[in-house]
Length: 113
Length: 116
Image (tube, rainbow over all chains, first blue to last red; front, side):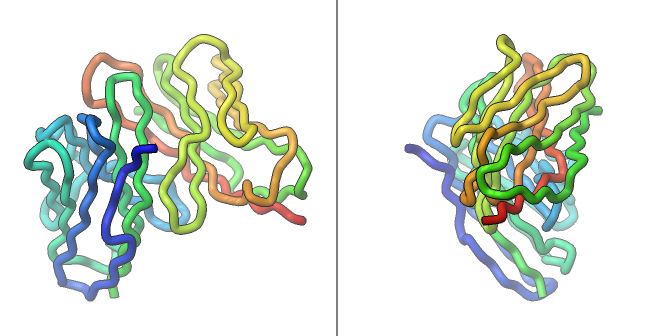
């Protein structure tokens, strides 16, 4: 069964450092999402891509976060500089079509010290 | 704006007992509704979804949910809980639209503990 891949699974970094997360969606899924999940809460959308284009990044803190999906396949989410409050699980999800379900990857757990 | 409320932060049940997790949503029209489960340190796995049609939907692992439009609810049920069901459960709502900006709004989750 096809799955959404994410790496790394865990990342520990110091405040003010740069971090990057990678996501490879299920093959053929045109829509890709990045979510942030703070411990004890539900996921919150950061950015949505349709192919290589950003559909919605209204909740992305653009002063420090950036996301790209250059070839419309895999995607990278970057934080620079990282802050203590960025400690969270970062989830990637993908969707095939308009009425299709979002499928989630295993997530990247980030700890900022 | 759409929102999802899961009023129970934590539920404890004994193995073999029945389970009901509550979910209420706020949205101007009939939304898409989902239940996901998350084991510790893992991503979200889809349990079931409602798009239209029969208001009682069956999912994986013996779970079912019933959409009640009059109560704006989509409660998750299981007749007999197994120890492996211990996890966090999230209800989510997504808009029905023709656009590509189709996003999910999640509730804050219900943590399920199963006693032996």
